[in-house]
Length: 322
Image 1 (cartoon, one colour):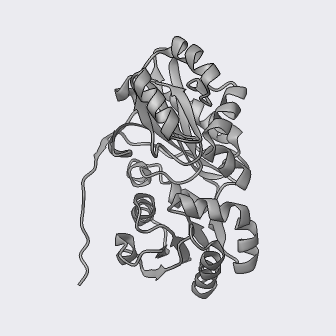
Image 2: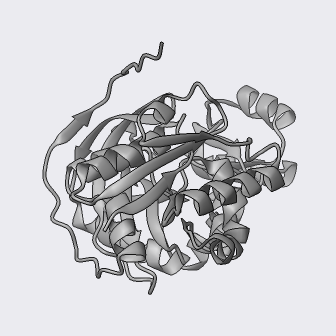
């Protein structure tokens, strides 16, 4: 059986990573891609490409065009490769499937909203007893006691959004007061170190809410993205990440970011989507896009994958069009 897979966000790391992972698999897939920008490298890598409206600018027209593509191309499943499209699809995924017959690989809207809001996520994780860095909404009354407990450096980041975009390290009172005045709607968080103990964990969750193994990567970052990663199958981190993914209500792909501290691991982020490390995960045996096709389209039961050992080193690569 040929499975028609549509990958969005083909101008970004995640979309291209999903494509790479599916091409590593043994699945018979026809791979389609979309992006709002014609000069997106991933559009020149798929079997058929489509330029669609910007999901952030015109939601109605974007969804209309996506529905046209899915019906015409008989798309079996959509994999979302950009955060704005994730936010657009989450509340309408069931309606979209009824209209087009195409499944959308997205967690429930309530999960997307909770994980996008870092203050709400902190409340959920701490309420469930999971280890997290202490986090506050910075106001004048609570800054003094918070600094007294943790000292500098501290982390300040937007309350809403995915991953570590616009994250800043605050190293003294002057920086805290400056960014406290200039940035709006942020959270302040204790700094968890050391820097060489940052991990990203891939977890796939079935429709019944059961995780199927996990892959733990110790990583190094450059400009917010993983540029070196080493398989570090730490069973404590794997078990913790699986519990969090299951308890949070994620369905399908999930990425959990954490750091090890002297007091053990601390959860930094939950991203209920494919990660930018998805092709690295796939190479070492944990292919989440392939699992999603097998489970949600081909109706196969997913068994716990066997993880290989090794490391990944990233570099730039070009694609040429004439």
